[in-house]
Length: 282
Image (cartoon, rainbow, N blue to C red; front, side):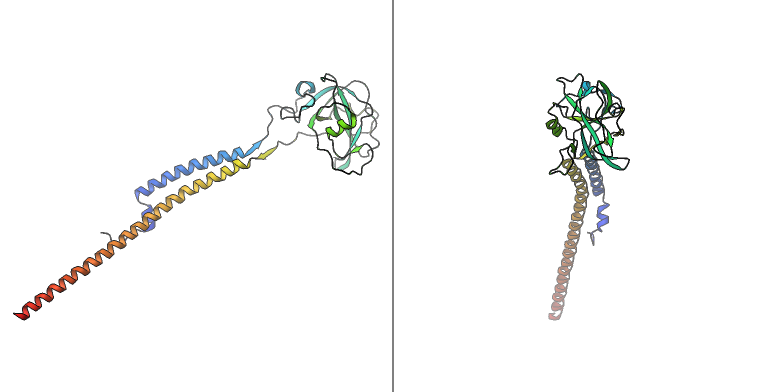
């Protein structure tokens, strides 16, 4: 019988535990792959399946009232129609080349819309809210970027008459009394400025793709990593338990051997004592 149990590392190097380590490695690899998949799923990026810079007809891709979805958001659109008189408002806090100013916005009645709906059109930018000039009259052909409505501005407001804090289509509908598209267009053609206006053209580039985090998938990704670590922990725990068991068996073997030797020594001493007494009596 062995005098002592093997060391912990010697136990871990035994063939059965090497095989168990390989199994734990395979399981952990699967768990890490699942974690990577869940992590990728947690980052849902809104991507476009079309070129936003290729101009399309507004009336072909977007309907009034319907909220702007990923299929039309940020696209450059062509539209025909005319500005509605006495609908111009100025939108405050708009930067242009680092300068604070205003957007001039007016209702544009879209030719070909189902019921003559209008859409807010950003004509241009002005440093002052009272010198934009009226929109041009007559039929116009515009091209610009279609964007979703902004949220209504906070109140109370300390703004001049005809100046709004945000480009909220809902607020403009109430102000104009017109049925409207739910988005707005920033004109790039400069046709909306008019020949006599001092407005500067406005350019709005493609908006960055939205990226959202799905916290449930992120939690699952972390959970799979924990499972992978647990697979190695379980292997090490089993190796350690086996090592402790072997140590206990070795200790019991030593104690049994020591006890057996003590008993044999006692028997031998008793036999010698008996022999000695017999000789003395003889």
